Length: 283
Image (cartoon, rainbow, N blue to C red; front, side, top):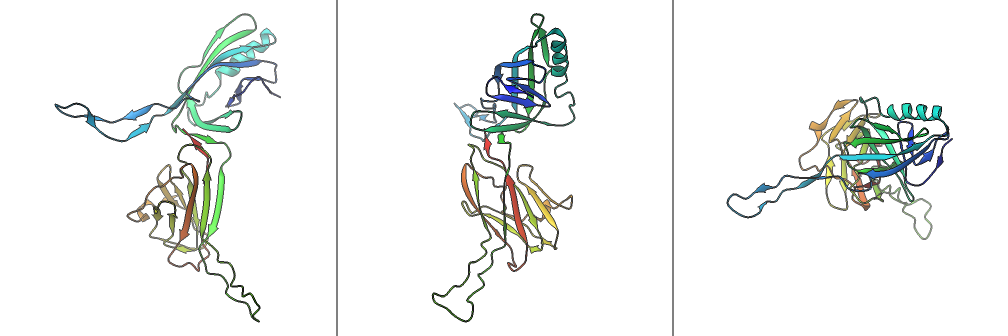
């Protein structure tokens, strides 16, 4: 059972920093670089020939490189050797990304990372050693560990009045094919949409900006179309259906704050549904 030494607590692949582990080893992170600060920026400006300055162009964030350096203090020599072996094995499998979670005072966030430099271990006395761990996150965003989810059906009119009539008249509430989605972070969050049939030519509409994702296809009952905005993929039953994306569609994300989204189709009497998951995001 681990206990905290100080916040933030860094956890990846079974190892944690700024804690006392179940063998009594204190793992102090004395230097962190790349988590709290922003990732590098990639510029593609072209110089103006025979003139001052350059031609403007968009900038993009680079990958996030995170370095954790610190000191491990073990209760005895044997525990020290086991701790060194444990540190050396962190993220030894380079074939997959692993979740790095950072528990801070007000939020728990994550990044998907892999080892990007050799782990350094240097003895410091009979019971201690210094360590250095460097990881890289291909996605520079820091995201909430717990995803948010929402779901709605297609818009339909209310059921109308009920006989015998009574006053005041009650016309029934419409089923409003809309979602209100909140991103509590500071950067655009990229959702994953799931449309489940039956539905014909579904449309996901950003009512806050007018942007939309529209698809020229019919989903039968039980068919599931998955739209990953960050990956720019559209799949149905594991097969790509990106060619069904209609012209004028935009891969829109969710900026900080609240975004109103509508779900529509050519036949709103169908029982199709729209589900979405996203994570609050920070740069």
